[in-house]
Image (cartoon, rainbow, N blue to C red; front, side):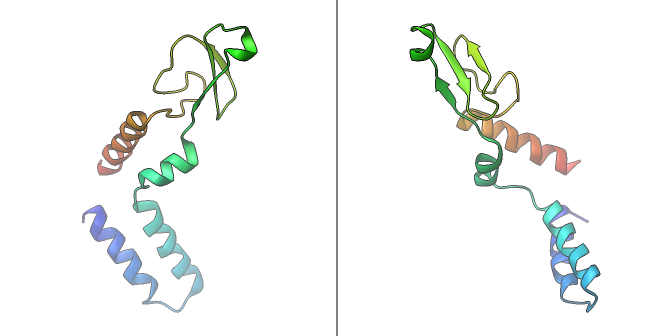
Length: 104
């Protein structure tokens, strides 16, 4: 059974039972099998680099908007502390990794 078939089965099974706990189980199963969208990843996890040069006398520093850690040096695709994706390319890499891990 493919993931798509399992999602359809779980969504269909919700309507086939009158037991509320079983309905909730199938809803949760369908949600767990459905991969997140790029918009969901952006909203839940994506960060942005905040320029901190002004606060540090023009020394090239940046701060992660998610974990608030300050770093010296150029921007990177991921935060070195919390791992949040900071660019569209980084979000795409996360999405690919999620799809690959769910295919196994």
